[in-house]
Amino acid sequence: MKDLLSLTYDELLDFVTDELCEKRFRADQIFTWLHKRRVKDFSGMTDLSKALRERLSKVALLNYPVIIKKLSSKLDGTVKYLFSMADGERIEAVLMRYNTGLSVCLSSEAGCPMGCAFCASAINGKSRDLTAGEVLSELYMIEDDCGERVSHAVLMGTGEPLDNYDNVISFLRIVTDERGQDMSGRNITLSTCGIVPNIKRLSDEGLPITLALSLHSPIQEEREKIMPIARVYPLPDVIDACRYYFEKTGRRVTMEYSLIKGVNDRDEDIKALSVLLKDFPCHINLIPVNPVKEAVFKAPERQEVIAFQKKVEKYGINVTIRRELGRDIEGSCGQLRNAKA
Ligand code: SAH
Image 1 (cartoon, rainbow, N blue to C red):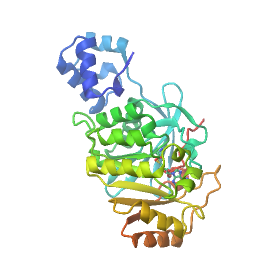
Image 2: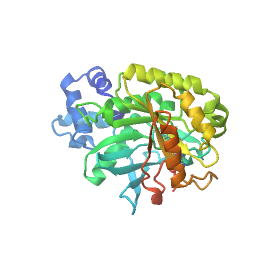
Image 3: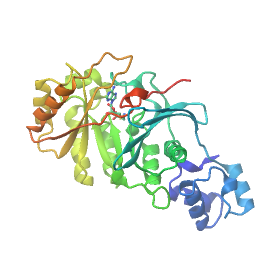
Image 4: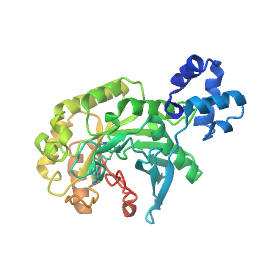
């Protein structure tokens, strides 16, 4: 059975013309039904002949997850969704309200294989990759549920997007397709722990999205202690890959920096940051580390976070502090998990 929601427009066109032996315009019709008009079954595709609809239901499937739980933050209106996928796998995604519009934080894998010490997503490892259609359907189900258009997306839920490269690229191509959701690439951020070869591949895809690197420490041996992937891809290589991304796309890279008291908030970290990022047009996004019950890390006090920001800015580096959303529903960075029932 062909998983239609995971097909880019070009792949759908091949499927329709080569495998179904139908005319090209049928691909446009199906793509529009799926990604613009959002019907969830073939019977709703009323401009296709009944015979074609019946054929489709025999050779293709439409896999939508089910929303099984919804938690709304009383602090800021953030909503965390728990989905059950077709095979029963459970994943989480988050809807956030900004003045610039609605944004979703999407999961790219069920669980995460990367093992970062401070992150809840890593606790049970990875169960499996998500398909392009599954990532997309997190967004579609959320739009359906809230009844509003979502203009921004961040691939910052569970999983490492560059560990599920092909499916994530298909997702990006489909979600930015003007025949469908038509989300602006500029409104999409992909966050990675630093998988060097795939940062380079992404640079060459011609997708105008923002890349965010989970930096978290500018000192190689300290980074290795909290992020196992650092042993595979050392910092100089990771930063080189980010420079390559900037050269190819012209887009500034965001450096995510989860501030952990006593671990990466010291003066020597600031000094090392200034050396590592010298002359690189990037921007640092500070995230006071969020509590994860299995981890022991503590965030510095608010004044300490601001002091850190000021000291780094003295080196001419742009630093912002991430607004914390959904903390009361465990919907903040690093708090999403491969939730079991
Ligand atoms: N695997 C990708 C996508 C996850 S994005 C990546 O590593 O970038 C989630 C962001 O939140 C990452 O920058 C991650 O390192 C950070 N994060 C994880 N746990 C956190 C925590 N407890 N507090 C604050 N940020 C955290």
